Image (cartoon, rainbow over all chains, first blue to last red; front, side):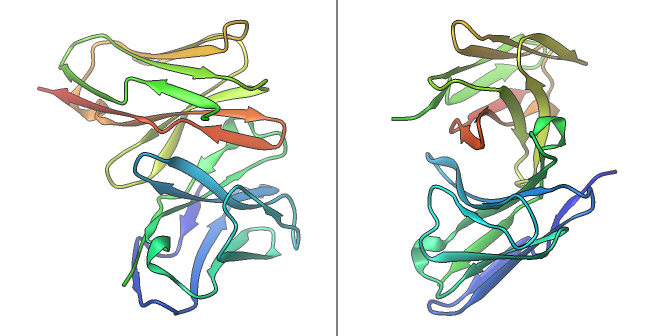
Length: 113
Length: 107
């Protein structure tokens, strides 16, 4: 059973903290993605990666960075958390070209207070 | 401007009803995905389409490439079908998402 695992389901952090969201996939997928989901706005792409040590900005990269040191792990970093980063964060992975292998994690609901 | 538009935004149905959710898009695509998100937040990929029609159990997805339109149908709906259904299209290396259709099926 293929899986994308996000390390936390719920997280509460204080304004200004550095926050790490971890995502691990066991499908040997090249592509990994970080999205945030907000009511009325749908899913928006923050960053994606097509290979180890490679990253590309998505639609809303400001205030975020990512790290992909190993193929199976893609980390999203909030350098200095702010209240407007309170959201549901979803990680996904896919093989090259997408297709059926586009698999999401179960999400991390982050609240910044 | 949204590249992907879904309708309706919210839908309530009685158990057993036939349900249709629509998706229109404005970009050239290589594939269209229908995703299902349950209240807990996890998302499951239901279908990937590049042409025609696919069926899985009570779910049917169709796409008309010329009209840039796709529909997701649920036959004999059941309360466990209650979820948010999201249309997503792949255009090159970009994914564009609809804002989702929230479906509630009442027993």
